[in-house]
Image (cartoon, rainbow, N blue to C red; front, side, top):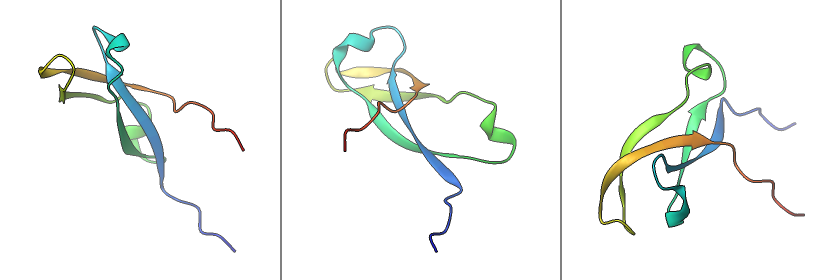
Length: 64
C-alpha cells in the first residue's frame, strides 16, 4: 500500500515576464496552514540574468 505524500509539486514562473521560459519546481505542503497561501519567492532568472519574483502555478498535466 502506497503512503500518501504530505507535499505536492508546484511550478514557479516569473511574475512580470512569464514568457522567458524559466521555471522552478518546488514542493509545497498539502496540509496545514500554508495550503491556502500562494507561494511567491524571489529567485534568479537565468534569461533575464537578475533576481525576480516567481509565483506559484499549477503543474501542467503529464501524458501517459
